Image (cartoon, rainbow, N blue to C red; front, side):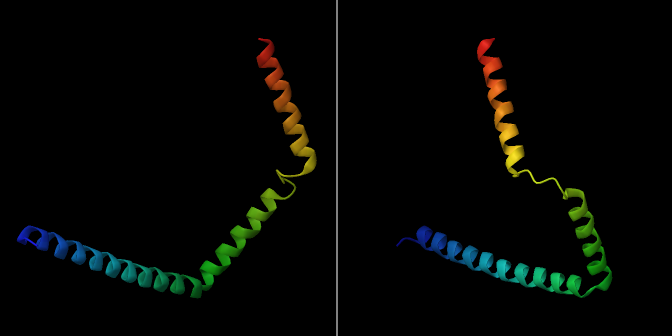
Length: 86
């Protein structure tokens, strides 16, 4: 192996180890932040309030209800028939 190939191989190995190290450190830091966030009572209260508001806003808006699906299919068919007739 010539000197250039040796340097490239060492550089690749170093970059790999650097990437793995950064991945481990960033994962540890994010878990630390998440742990601190989950321990905050104000954050828990805000999240639960936002969750309740989101549930209220989507109540009765199930897009997969059978009546809504058949209405959407019939509307699509009528639109396609109108485009074909033009």
